[in-house]
Amino acid sequence: MFRIPMVSVYRYRELVKNLVLKDLKLKYRDSVFGFIWSLANPLMLILVYSFVFGHVLRAGVERFPYFMMVGILPWNFFAQSLVMSTGSILDNGGLIRKVALPLEVFPFATVVFNLAQYFLALIVFFPMALFFFNVRPSWSWLAFFPILFMHFLFTLGMSFLLSTATVFYRDVRHFTEILLMLLFWLTPIVYEIGAIPDALRSVVYLNPASYFTMAYQDILYRGTFPSIQTILTVAVLTVLVLSAGYAFFSLLKFRFAEEV
Amino acid sequence: MSAAIKLVNVSKAFTIRHNKADSLKSKLIGTFYKRYREQRERLWALKDVTFEIRSGETFGLVGRNGSGKSTLLKIIAGIYPPSSGEVRVALNARIGTMIELGVGFHPELTGKENVFLGGSIYGLTRKEIDEKYQAIVDFSELAIFMDTPIKNYSSGMQARLGFALAASMDPDILLLDEVLAVGDEAFQRKCMDRIDRFRARNKTIVFVSHSADAIKQICDRACLLNDGALLFLGKAEDTLERYRALLNGAAPGHELGDGSVQPTGLTGTSE
Figure 1 (spheres, rainbow over the protein chains, first blue to last red):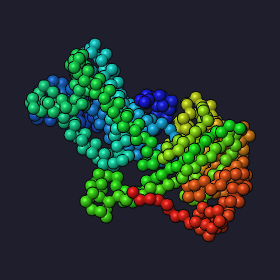
Figure 2 (cartoon, chains in turn purple, red):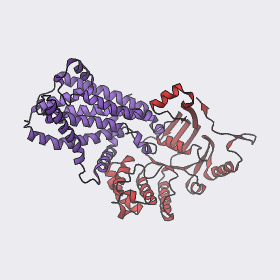
Figure 3 (cartoon, chains in turn purple, yellow):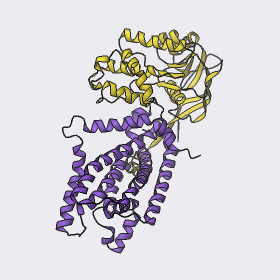
Figure 4 (cartoon, rainbow over the protein chains, first blue to last red):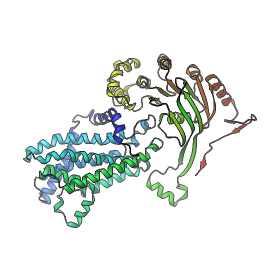
């Protein structure tokens, strides 16, 4: 009953690749600074928050710019994937009405595109951080890719959910943008989870995105392996969201060609 | 001869929405104010259609605008599911669709980039597209424009590239929707040649057209759809004759046994 989504996506891997390349090319073609623009956004955020939290509010997080880089890059991957997913099916309506193809490729390509952006940003920022903040290599880095893999699947699950919901209610796009603004502050990206009052902390713990952020911070910022609880929570959330998202998508995908 | 495609009691209903409420706001308003409420109507685009298309034949679908031809083609292609009934396609048959040319082409990308993107939309692998690339370029006669963004192409050139790409697919069953009228006369002849070669290799073609000439030229058999129902099925010439009679008739409708004509309009039932 539950068919593995990766089979059809694998068969159409060439399409996924071309959709991702198309978006990357279109994004940077004909602009002089090209890829540098997508680095400017996180860089500016880090600079502004470092100033506000480091010098105005004196939050007392050590190596704040590095701390924030570790949190903001995966957050951007997650948030931008979600916003883009709302159009994954809808914006490809012309195609979906004319050719029979596995519709899973569209949300999948959206998340892969944002993953590629995340990698490109990481390749530029991480060596800089190593240099400026004197970060020592750590065994905990080994845990980075397993966490990233789960983060990818979790985001994919959300992407299936949102791309489907938007087909039926166009509100989802706006709702997602607003919700992400709220979630940003309920995720420990610009503050440490230990530094906030208990009442507020339980709210942060209700936000699934927090666990991924905390795992990344353990691995890259603190140089320790995430706790078993964190890893288990991340794994359970990933399985739940991916299966729920894909089930929702599969249930309704037969109507996409008529609704978009 | 075995059946390539079998349709058993296929019906398809579309929900037509007036005042389409696709946002929560309009839905809410509709709950309180009746005149803004979404009106739904079920329109039967296909009604209980049963027939089979034999393997290796070229089969035409004729009928007036809105008679359900394209819907039927999309159901065979698997783009829409039927509301009821069943579509059976021969096991392991690769279906190629040419419902619109240049599907998925992006105006900012070059001709070459679009061939690779478009090829992968049809499910081709990188290797397959690499192998076919030269043939596609040759067929389209656009070799010197392959590095130009296709937004600078004329619509005829875009259609030629689209046809060249679609024609390079090697499906067992080809679904064609009125796409042959592209480019100049010389190019149209090339398109027809390509279809003929396809037929010569005993592939199955389902062809939708308004053009009686095109149907007569390439189809073995054809069926006539009217208002979603199968009105006639037989040899291409016989079906065309029937189609002409329908067009010349006073009102479109199902012929009754006594020769009188029962007019049918939109036979939708409101929900």
